[in-house]
Length: 247
Ligand SMILES: [Zn+2]
Ligand SMILES: [Zn+2]
Image (cartoon, rainbow, N blue to C red):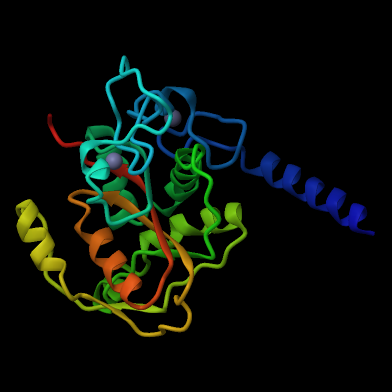
């Protein structure tokens, strides 16, 4: 019987595919898998695929020769707030050109390839999160935007890890936009915005935080701080793209 439904499901999918052929969500070129990018668009991103910090994923130069456990100076000094952090690609003109419409322009169809890339970014780490937690949005922003872009990204990631999404244990207060602030100001501005409303649900849990972009790392650091204080055991993070500091 299960097999019958599996065949029926496949037939239905083929029929939908026939009616609506898969197209690259960015340029509209035909692709074989629904929601995936065409190879031209895929090639425009700066994917973090070379050597990188074992803990935070910060990319090393391509010719960098190190063991698989090599860490960046920040992580080696024990100054990282997360146990593991990964980003799929570098924040640049290309990633910005998909992030802005995804976040503010309702282009939620980008979520599929973005979250697939984020799962790929976690390929070299062996983690088993109990909870997948999209970075919370303040209620006012959620009402204005209509959706939390981090929750859209978390769906496929949660499926990949077989873990539930937790989008209501932590609440976020509204604070005006952090754009164009200095590194130190960002950390100061985010301090105290998160409140763990349901401590029991995060206690002793391994939590994978999900967001679209990491700039200074202040948001993850603050969220990790309050979750640890509430008893979370390990905190990991994954984003679609991250700002890479100029060396
Ligand atoms: Zn394309
Ligand atoms: Zn590092």
